[in-house]
Image (cartoon, rainbow, N blue to C red; front, side, top):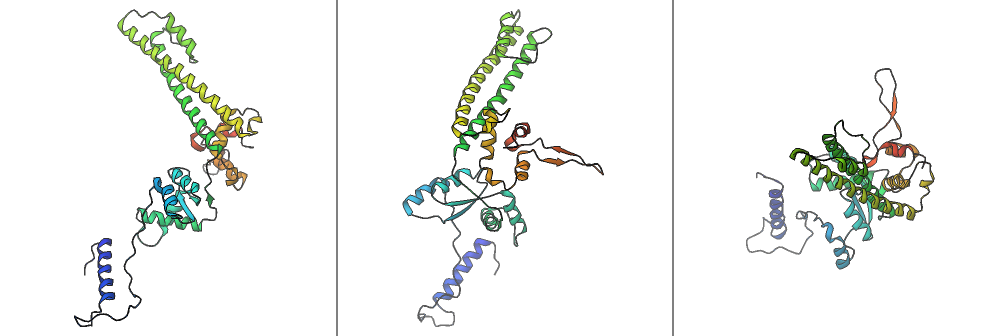
Length: 311
């Protein structure tokens, strides 16, 4: 018999098991089988069903302890964060598995290392069982509040830089000789107040500069609100990180929000490697050169971490 695929194989095995266990081939047509004997061939198992993330709490409340006591989530700090937090809130013990160990298990496993849901689930489970350093997922705490507002402040700062650069470029079009690079909303308003457009083109540039100025003032207002919320959140955390010279609420919230739990780093060297303050080798030939990494977690500037590496 030619087996065309996994589904065809399951159907054939199910029919064979039903025929073998229900009526023996060597018996007559009208004879019934004897007493029930444990089947030497069991029908194929039903593949495990995935529980949607939005129904985890409902299943636990209505059906009791539906889930097993231990769970492994790949990327519990990224795409799997919501599901991991729902499982933790339901009383489950969740282990965070990084994508790299799961990919290694899938690549080195015997059989077909296809990228599909069953193979991914098996690889994550094997990586969670055999990993020497497993990180248990905890419920979100005040560090998440600091991370939320620090990211908001960082995004608004990027938007302000873009708005200021666009406004500066337009002001250079209407001002002979250009304007200084250090542009503020009040300085831009003074330049626009002294400018008198004398043509349709000049009027278009003037109107565009006023729109960019309005964007800059709006972003400045939002940035001030975000800084106030960030300051309140840092004070509520009770951290002493702001006692370090040069560390304000923004840097303190960025460091605490990204690190969250300092105990997940077994040594100071691991923490330095994570935050980008550990020297990396950029040697060429016989000449040994080391420099600090310019990369830091979550796309932050490594200079923010350099000032707080002793935390």
